[in-house]
Length: 241
Image 1 (cartoon, rainbow, N blue to C red):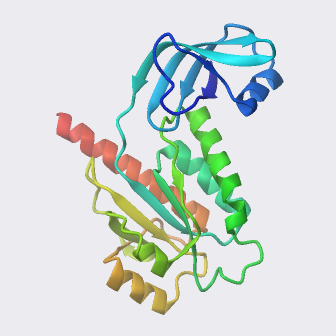
Image 2: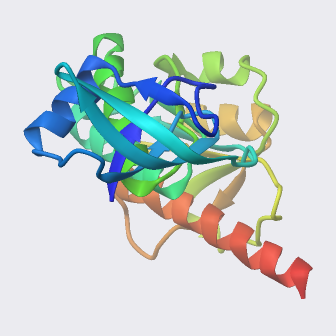
Image 3: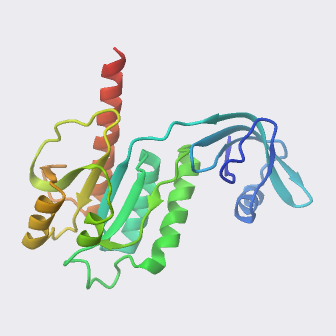
């Protein structure tokens, strides 16, 4: 089945939606057959099933069935962006795992790194996340926010229960099915003592161990996303029984 992205709010049964240049180009490159079965998302919970059609060099998605996915609880990853290419990998895998918000953070140990993610690289991060959602069938695009310091992040007003990834922390105690969570992921060198003190006093974050060894930031970020997703699924299943 082919996967396409359509404009927000356009998925209604019987609609014939004109695809943008990027989506049309992808279908051309893949030599998709006319009337091929397709699945569509709009990035804000809209889901569509139908087929694609080509007309005068332009592709359209014809909606046969449409649905709206419930907005998921917030899973925010605030990740020290010490390397832009590895952060792209975080964006891709986070989108597949249903992370709702992704924040690159600048710390004492990343501020001087030549390969760190900068504002100019955020559009590429957002495109990578969108493409990952399309392939995974995730109808909710993660919101990729501006690069922020810990101080800026603390003033953003995110209403979540915060966890600090720390090798010396405790195992995760569990996440409720609808609990909003935020994870603070430092660089390999870790947060400085001052940063940890700020996190604990300002965010009231609990220290959680993600593994027995020191993890690279992208590994830690994905481990946090998996823990969140698994805990929510387990809590939801227990509630249904």
